[in-house]
Figure 1 (tube, helix red, strand yellow):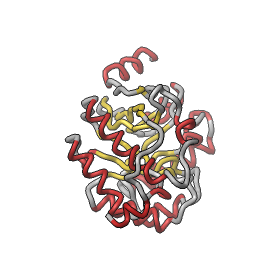
Figure 2 (figure 1 turned 180 degrees about the horizontal axis):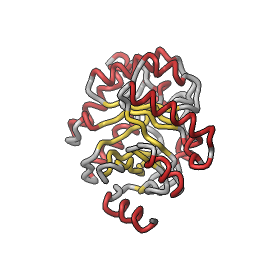
Figure 3 (figure 1 turned 60 degrees about the horizontal axis):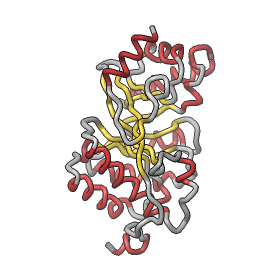
Length: 251
């Protein structure tokens, strides 16, 4: 508890948050693989508006509040899929200590912690050794791990060489217009081969058009996320049947 007192992660925020949930779709099994929790204001204000309120003083509390709120709301909504939660590496004071509240919330709301995915955005400038320490701690506790926006940030292959997460989420800028861009297709092919050899799930995020979707599906991408499939649902969960009906209607 000494570490928690030093970072003051248990100090209440001076603003309230809510969550939207965007599905990660399993094309092969025609199901929702996971729901990603996205912070929102209580009236649906966007993430940017809420993140603007995060300061050096409240970032630890904000990170913990997001985790607990995501688990609580997902449980209240009857989420039966995995739950993907973003975390801020610079808001993790000490990995083991910072997990206590997450595990406690999972028990309190009866949400199996094995169904929780922790994902980090690769574009945040942070010590790779710190991310490795966090990821290894989470993995040892039974959580799944993911690198978000892979290919956009600073650490890239250096991080991947030292730790293999369960999931790599390809940056949406690589996905945008990939159906008609030989350079992006070549980069994608390399990433797909690396993921296969390292036994990592490859997830394409930011899928926004039918041609992008068709290219990715034709090239073996099983997991996808993006507005073409389903937009984030404020305080609600997407239904797999409706998602795939939409895809069929688009054909």
